[in-house]
Amino acid sequence: MSHRARFDDAVRALSSPGDLRADLCSPFLSVLPVTGVSISVLGGIAGPGTICASDRRASRLDELQFDLGEGPCWEAMASRRPVLTENIRHQTACDAWPALVGALGDERIMGVFAFPLAVGSLDIGAVDLYTEHPARLDDGEVADAMALAGFAVWHVLHRVLDDHRSQEDSREEEPASSRREFHQATGMVLAQMDVQASDAALLIRAHAFSTGRTVLEVSRDIVDRRIVFSEEMP
Image (cartoon, rainbow, N blue to C red):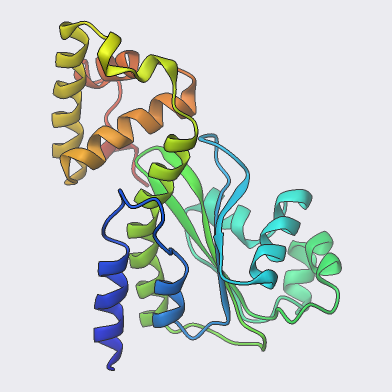
């Protein structure tokens, strides 16, 4: 199968964010020349925690970064840019993340590549890829990983919000006026971000959850243009 066919299959596999059982790691493994994958939540929306990991080493890499508060995943989320480390045992990486490199010990993890998960103003987490030997990703592979991360982020939002449903987000208990404001805000976010209506609604709920506010409060701020997601993009 050609690379383009594998990439298209990976995109299709990540294009149904409502499926909470979807395998989020395999699409990355099918397209990129890496050994393992993990996807984690690191930002204010929840966590830190691993959403999925392809193997024990990928899970261990996440766990160490959570515990130590340093590593490529944190840097990728903070910078909103890929962090590409051909050999994490190299002195440059040792200087950047000394505790992590020391804690890895003899684990067969060499190349580590982290990609941010972010939507609008929300810094959500990162995708970590690793190889057993020193390696690099070329520009096309970096672009593929970023594109796949852009699809995976919607799955992550669905899973986090499904696990942390807010009492304020009960449609049955809201007056009609509140529902109208929410739908109006959803339409505005849809236009700003060029996403589907379901994703726009999800983004409003995620923003409310991450800031400790109600969906109605966030909806009013969007309608009054105090929150404009397109202007919050990097």
